[in-house]
Length: 168
Image (cartoon, rainbow, N blue to C red):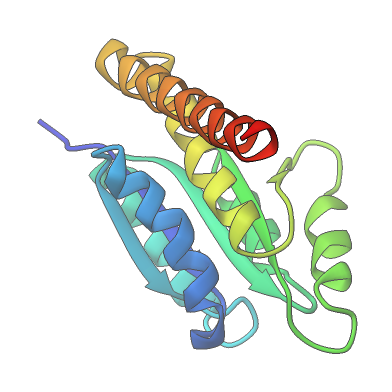
């Protein structure tokens, strides 16, 4: 039986803190994760081979983290019909805006779901990949619901503490 997993790809070693945020969410939700550094411009043949191999081994989705020109997600999307989630990385003089625009502007028929710039976006990429998997995995869907419930309870507890400070 093939074990499914999510591949988290980074275009440069400087993208690791962003990619790690996505991988941490996936691992927290007990989703097998593989993290690889594959440069869109320096290793295109290796990317092609990796995508083909990952598909044979059960990849469910790809999360691609890249800055500046941010071509990694588009290249990955051109090689697979699996969901690709692009995470723009905040680097360079434009603080990730160039990455965002590069990632979100894919040609028709080669979609890349794009999340926010940086680590918050990477965490959401992890959650989005988990939600895609949860469509066919009731246990994972329940883990996601429990996490949402815990987030709600945390906010309510913080509000109660705030109200206590304001009134007392």
